[in-house]
Amino acid sequence: MKKFILGLILLLSALTSCSQNEELVMECKQGNRDKDFSFLAKISTGKLCFVDPSGRTFGCVDVSTLNSKIVKTKNFNSKSSELGKLLDVEQDIYLKIDRNTGMMGGYFASNDQNMNIRNELINCTKKEKL
Image (tube, rainbow, N blue to C red; front, side, top):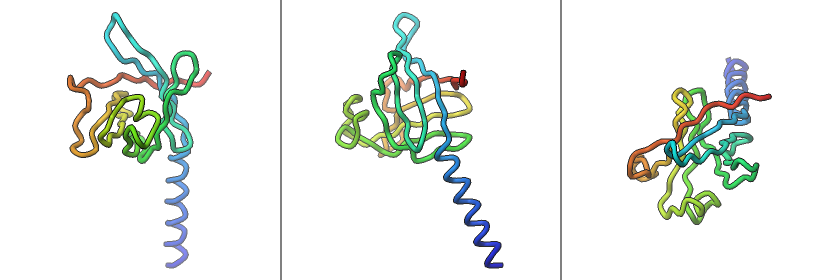
């Protein structure tokens, strides 16, 4: 029985580490038809990083949840991360991507409300490897 429980624990920890090391690259677009801003969202080795069209990484945050349904970052703000400084947020926020719909949003950690006053989300699609 002890061997079974130990084996189960080892299997679960292996599955957890595999999902945290999964690489996922998404192409995201924000804005309206006249003024789109596109970027890549790259999830790898426990981090979500944003890359502009020129290839420059402009912010990374740690991932807390990565599974088949969602990608969710750890809470961050302007004092704790480069991306928080770029977004100029004083309150703790987190980013969440619904992997079924491809929609990404920023949410206040205190009440889980969308930080965008118009409640808008960013549309992302999985980018396939070449």
